[in-house]
Amino acid sequence: MHQERRTQWLKGVLDLCVLATLARRESYGYELAKALSSAGLGPVQGGTLYPMLLRLQRTGLITAEWRGGETGPARKYYRLTPEGQRVLRESAAGWAAFVADVDAVMREVLPR
Image 1 (cartoon, rainbow, N blue to C red):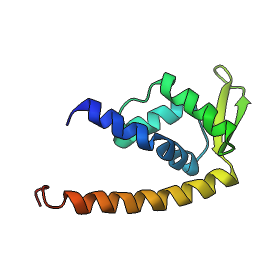
Image 2: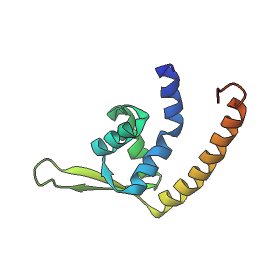
Image 3: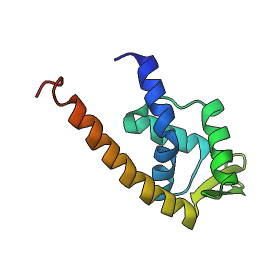
């Protein structure tokens, strides 16, 4: 698969993936990027991730809190707000329906 196409697909769902990852547990940026990469989404650069986190924070879907580290620098931890949880539930349902629609279209060309 072309990496460029995969990158474009990811741009469309990265917000949803970030919200879903934060639904499991609060996280700081680098940890969040590692979790997304480990999930198979590939590297998510800070220049993409941090502006998105700021936008999600400004829209009230996540909150952020600075915490001092015991062995390192302070980190900004992100977590879902109740509104973020609601949006995630709605978006996840919409995503599942969209995936089913795309699968139905692709069924004719994909090997079984």
